[in-house]
Length: 161
Image (tube, rainbow, N blue to C red; front, side):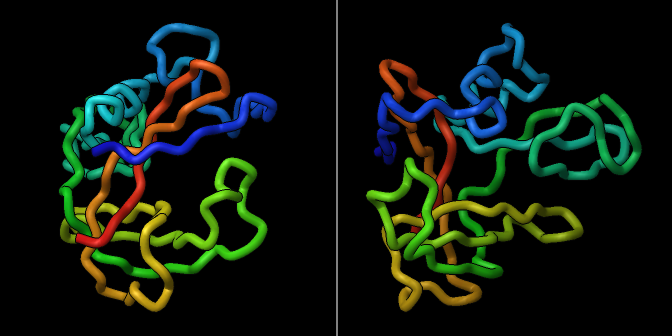
């Protein structure tokens, strides 16, 4: 099941906060990482890995930060990771998340970090701070963002494994 949140039609987002145009391979704000969003829409959480030096890169990039190669491939992020750090948001949440407070923002490590893994921050809606501990096993799931209007985009969130 895909978790969903709805964005009110009356909130205009500046391009830095609205990744809508980046989710298309064409258009003025398109990037070479549009595949990341396409994969999320298909239920896959992916990132880039350098074919030259083997560095796993998150967030996905168009150029390897280790060796500056553009010879990258898309790889799946493991389904289960481990909470490295977290905080609970009770007030001051972004407008699109005000109806879901309190929620957790967690840093989750996937794979053998830092050697052959990544560290990802994300939101957890269904757990309280009393239920999360350092080392808690969590898994990612797609997050469907509805609105404004008929717009539909995808991100990810975490839930207890």
